[in-house]
Length: 511
Image 1 (cartoon, one colour):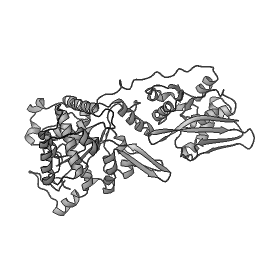
Image 2 (tube, rainbow, N blue to C red):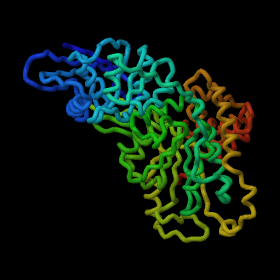
Image 3 (tube, one colour):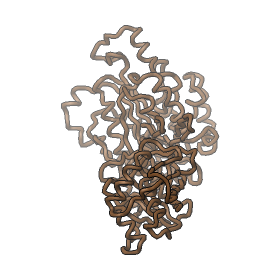
Image 4 (cartoon, rainbow, N blue to C red):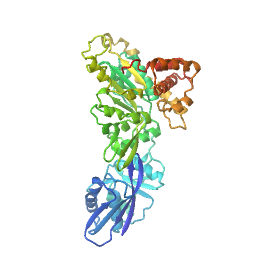
């Protein structure tokens, strides 16, 4: 007898339907074959499914079994085909009533027949909704993840035995109650509060601008000046995720299985801080079965690269496409996948190998050649893609021991309110477009959404001549000025906004 069960596979962040066809002819020597480009995890499903069916109390056929995963030219990976394969065997052997059309099945089986937590549930639920399926059957432990998707019934299943009884109409399973995603979204928590950061007002202002417009920022300063502390305080002033952003981020974390313990959705903006020994695949993504890297895990959040020049040159150069396009495309012989990578880059660096070049109190021990080689580790094209360049000087020791001015330092909550207000202005302005923040504007969109007065244009012409700005830098200055105007609640960009934006461009050939 032939049975067909509908399941799905993830291709990038999108789901594609997979037909699980099970044929049990009733004759031939005992064999269990799976075809359709399965990987090792899918091949091992034979043992999991056999044990799960037997331990459930059902009969496992002692004849030839052939399972075809169609389309055959699409690579199949992971253990999520266990449930549809087991269900297909039970239907083909006549142990289950086959009347369950319009349903999609997805889940990993334990040897005792219980269903385990399975990655990729959110994309699969959206696939079922887009293809107009009536229901999706998933592991019960994943039900909250799927319950945020409206317009489709989600049946949480605890075990294969429960599913058998449900289809044989001996028990009833209620669909999971829907969950409102908006009620889950919240402000990110940070390791430090901005009120704890002594001095560095110029750097804190740059961080506020970066958070408001999602602008990349590069901090250079001596060891102990507070660069890392500033970066780790940044999540506390970021705007709250909106619904479609949260779904995008949650899909990435769903397919990688990197949601925090106890969490079923991404409710805050992520903060990723990979070590400088991270490989190119670890940062960008890849592998034989391409998976997202750090740039995609930081989507709509922060990617903090401390000790920026210590990253291998080829790793840093691979950041060019995601920084420019907001996506990363991974191509392999079997095909290519595209992952979103719209992140806020925060890079930090010392000015030289010893760290004290230009410090007024400590002498630098590096030779000129060493300093030059260290600074050239970061290429011009990468630096040109960074909107804000900030010098972070060492903190005066007198300010470190004096706590009298602590009450006057702004807390992260106050700054976050201004950032949220500026981001709300941008959301309203770009409604109906693909843009979410000022940093994402194309050169054509800059002309449309950032009109400049003759005085502003004259100032920019002078800056282009004196600072040797590239075309990319020119547009970045305008986008940063647009963000500064949004922070002030001003509709038009003024010379003051342009002047402040120009302060954040590198003033010399050294970075």
